[in-house]
Length: 240
Length: 178
Image (cartoon, rainbow over all chains, first blue to last red; front, side, top):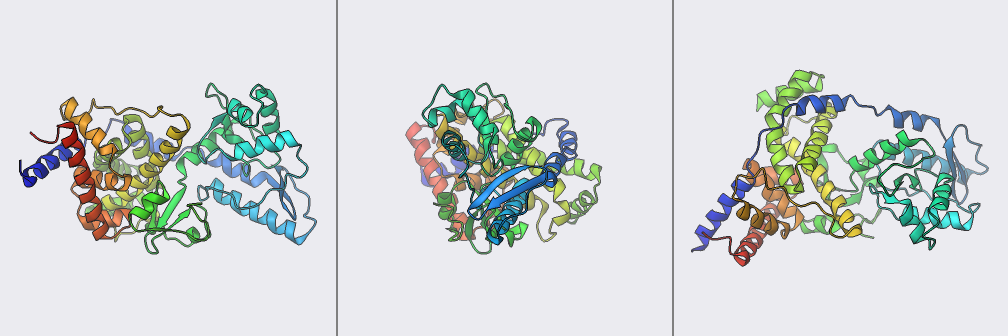
């Protein structure tokens, strides 16, 4: 068979494989209903958050009022945290840059929180996974308690830890918020490229703020982006 | 084309009937692309739902210089590519748990479908996305370039590379020739 014929055959195969199908009945109605769905939960949460920081990092995120920062450096960090949380809750940030201060946190809890930090954005792991990572595979309940006392929820992602049976488990801001955060992270991409600069950034990078929506393309990996002529950002360093 | 843009203007004003028309007009093609990229009907419907939701929510920011289909495909590929990224992470975490393809909706004989599906899995992601867009809707190189934010030359080289890989894979399986 000549190359030309083989190509024609491949074209026919591909055309058959990718042939469009009729949309399922009621899809439009379902989408319109989802468009009216609740997003208010996260907006309400954000409005009620109190954020405290020391000069070393954010030390407390809780509902209610927060104490005045002791120094200018602490105030700047608390403001940075508020800004980053605002972007995160609007689906415009997939990572936190602001440092956290865990100096007052007991050793076991610190290790639990650091293990939770390893769970990728948009993913979930069971409590038992954390217990195994901190070297106490049977201490599942203690892990739950340690996560429940997370001083900096949202920034350290204890909401990504679920029960082994797929149940949500508890959450400091309530199970409904935990569920909304999972949905939010599922709908937020992690890597975006700018079509005018051909630079790929992590979502939330300072460069992304100036990007027009028309110029935004999502990539699955930095290698994929490189394969079509994009280079990684030197500020947020998505390849690191 | 003007008709499409008029439809988008009505969607931007919150006209639900216009949005229904938009869904009717495009969801079949969007589903075909998403279904073949993601492999499962449920994930594809979810991706199309998210795409159309973003379209509904962002209709006011729609730039009429774009064809509506190009704009929708940009949103859809953004959603699907991110889903593929997540799936990569998930597969690395729980080896072997990735979903299998659903061949039931294919028009091809099952063996040919499966061979092509497996061959496509060997094609790099970006080339696979371009192949899907090219064959579902016969989009031009220019439109593909705009959708993925790349140059026309990159589109051409990615498509050629993807098809060469497919031919090799299908030849290995003995299914690429009649």
